[in-house]
Image (cartoon, rainbow, N blue to C red; front, top):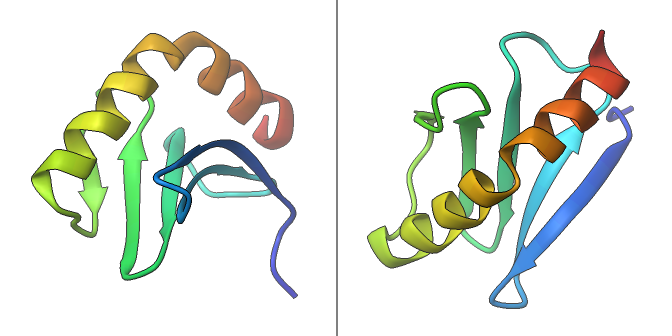
Length: 80
C-alpha cells in the first residue's frame, strides 16, 4: 500500500507536486504525472531523480522556490 500523499500544486492540469507521508530523508517533493516522475530536493532545489522537459522544470522549480518554506514545513509535519 502506498503512503498517503499531499498534492501541493498542479501544473498544466496533469502534473502533481506531492509531499508524501512516511517518506525517506533527505527532505524532498515528487513531481508526478503523465510521463514524469522526479524528485526535487527541498533544501537545494536540485533534481535528485528523474527528468522532465526544461520548460516544465523551470515552471516547477520557480513555484517550489517561492513555496520552499511551506513545503519544508509540510515535509517535516509528515516525516519528522
